[in-house]
Image (cartoon, rainbow, N blue to C red; front, side, top):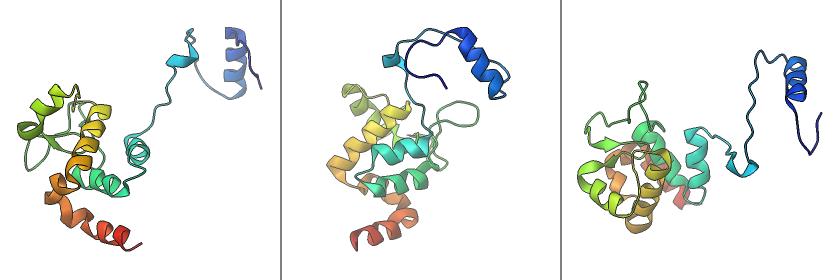
Length: 143
């Protein structure tokens, strides 16, 4: 195991071979630019750790999808103007989100705008999916 310090390409190749990694590539990066990639359900869970109902709403609204299988923005089945993880409606929210500098078409932007909606309106913007998450809300309130 290599501890703190610099790792050269020979070390990386050696580690890769020892761990049966087929190919390696190296690039020099600053540690401040390295971000841990999280899957969307994990990201939602962390972002809304203080509001677990929002985790359930994200699942009910989009099954935690920001993008479709083809890489395009995930749109609602009932209303194609609903976009992303929290199915933020373009007709009602796109203009305001842009004024706030929030891009609802990105994962982070969709989460950020959902946070804004939740803090200003509670769960009301997602009332149409309440049959899916409503029982969870009742359970959470009884704790």
